[in-house]
Length: 199
Image 1 (tube, rainbow, N blue to C red):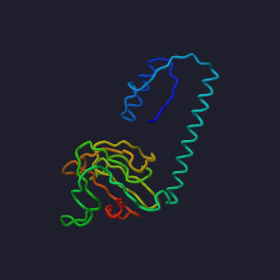
Image 2: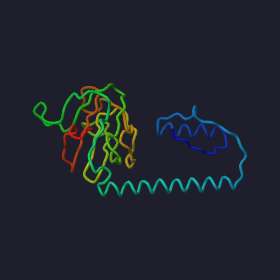
Image 3: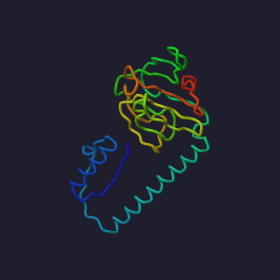
Image 4: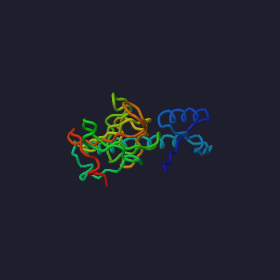
């Protein structure tokens, strides 16, 4: 469980902070805050400010290193996909109804969690014709996964995600006949059968 320490001067600031976090991450922190009232010196505040700056620099460095790993294509030397959600495969990769189905359809109740199948960086999170609410994640210079028809999106462009991290929820947005996630794997922009790589 992540732990954060902050300095706020009054309860109004706590409420305002909660509203910002709730809007951005859909998390209510009010019930999890432990308040300890103390008088601290200006020197102590300056020390905390320096610590916050160092943490920010560390996060930027981590993002830079992740970006370099992506450009080299070495985030995933061997493709070992995780299933993006808990459900049943309702339509496989390949020819379907006279057309070519570019991914897997995995049926699950509306609101079921969707997870990233590999470590990577979010390159698209939003609405796209046909796909509805969709997330696209780049895992190397040549590898991308796509998660379509979501009801809710929990990641933003540029965000790095880990394999198994929640990125959205199952829905039926776009061209869809019921709640499911349409899951694609693309290598050099060519659709591949995800089932071959799911382990």
